[in-house]
Image 1 (cartoon, rainbow, N blue to C red):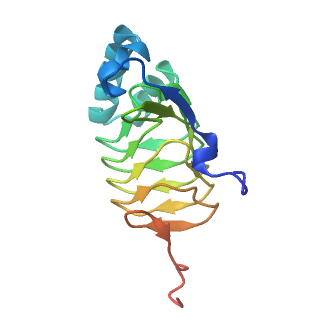
Image 2 (cartoon, rainbow, N blue to C red):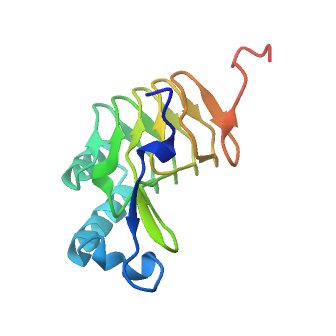
Length: 171
């Protein structure tokens, strides 16, 4: 993780063609057949109880998935740009978490790599935005919205996610 760069520094901006918003012209960004294939694979990843199958399927759509990654039921990787997602060894992505590598806006869409470090944990229902890096052994609390990088070993919680005190009970 690079300390002096923010997620916004790592995001690529793409102008919206025409007069509509960027989501209205998504087919200019990605081929519909690719998105349909990704969607079916993501649907299978979301409902499969097999962690081994989930890792295999995620790799088929271009996601970098380390050894021993645990991907929770209903957790959703980015459907449009799964190749921008990296989940390192032994990380946990909790139930119904969403890892987004894109955001469609009015005048542009943005893409950015998301990296979940080794042994990091993303809590149930959390949402990670494009360009965010979550450091090794970091923790994201359930239902948090991660808009900024999480340092190695750090814990964040809330909407937007903010650093939490230590786990030793003294703070």
